[in-house]
Image 1: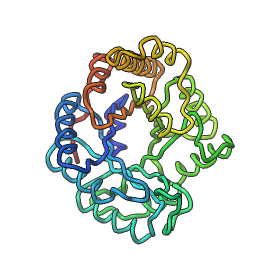
Image 2: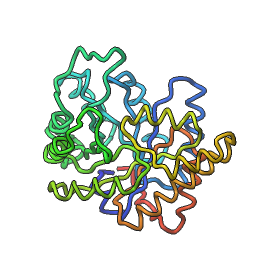
Image 3: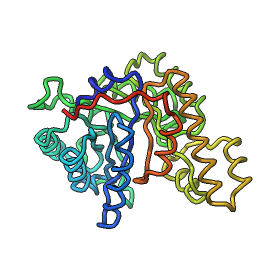
Image 4: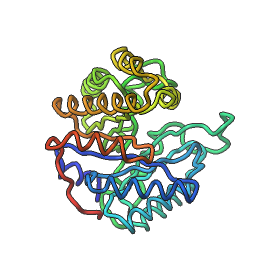
Length: 301
């Protein structure tokens, strides 16, 4: 289902992110989580892509398997670092042949060592432009395209005005929606959304949410999402139970649920939950939203 149709069918989208497993054991855990989360009827699920395309085949294989064996609408990530124009064209051809209608276009992370020996794209906007030009044989509108947004700023672009220019360039190149990096302060998201509006950005903006479920996980999240700010009110709640693993998880899930309820009350276009290939926390968050959620339009095309 094309992302434009997904947004047309849902006042608010609820989507999930998975990453491709590397072992048989992690694959079994992932599909157990998918089986448990499928009952919540997510609007779509995204599948991540390793630095410089290091999980290229794993990402493709997982997306194809999801299309063939589930009712989910999978959206693969695609990055430009480490790829030539020919690489991207070949990947787009494979996804189009597999019946995939949407992509999430990202600049991507550098591989270990910080050097990329091959890239035809200076910025994510160049990748969006290449995808938009691709003649998708099964979709007259071409691929639906998502791009990333950073409510608390991109660590590589300290100039926030220039950062908004880059985001506007991605939308002007043909992006259909923006999916944000995770955040813990909804005011940061609302300010970001307002700045997008002032910049003339009119596409849906999905809020990226990930619950803190362990104290080590909190530090890991701060590393992965460089620049993310953890508010004092959350740190205080976590510190009060730091030696109690189950209490930490409960606080993290409750806090994420509170974020989602506040976002829904303030007209968010969609909520994108980063699952880490696990179902328990995500299930509890979605279950807690109850009647605030709308069912998806059940169509994979």
